[in-house]
Image (cartoon, rainbow, N blue to C red; front, top):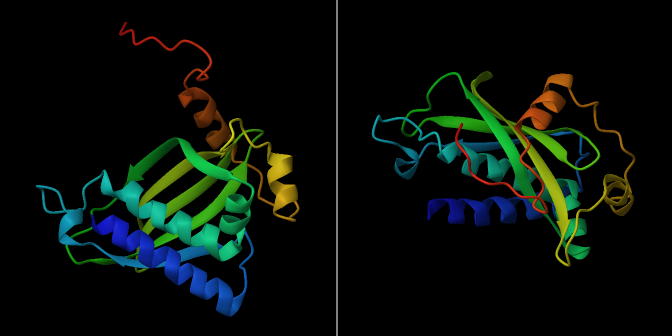
Length: 186
C-alpha cells in the first residue's frame, strides 16, 4: 500500500514543480530521492527484488509529469504499458537507506520508447533497469512514434537506441497478442 501513497506524493510533487518551474526537456535525467522502507524489505533484510520495478515507476511518473508529456498523453486518450524490462543488481539497498532513482528516456524504435532507471547511492549505481514501453490508445491500437512526437510538439531528439538494447528487445519479445502463444516447455 505504501507505493500508492508514494505514487500520489510523487505525481503531486511533480505537478507542483511543473507549474512552478515549467517543463524540463525530455532528454533530462530525472532524479527522485527515496528511502528504503520496512515494507520494501525481504526476508534477507535488503530491498526485495520485486520492489525495484514499483519504485522505478515513481521515477518514470515524475519525469513524464515534469516534461509535460503526462498531460498530453492523457488528453489524447493514450496510456503507456511496459512491454518488457530487464534489471541488473550490483549492491543491496538496506533498510532506511537513502537512494536516488535516476530516470532517463534512452531512445525509441518504431513501436516503443525505452527508459533507463537506476538506483544510485552517493553517485554509485546499485541497480539498473531498462524498460520498453508502448503507448496505446484507450480506443484500441498502438500510437505510432511520429504521432506521439507530433502531439508532444517535440522533434525526435532522443539519442539513438544502443544496439544491445535493440537486440535485447528483439530477443525477449513474445508473439503479438493477435497471434497464438501456447505454453510449451521443451
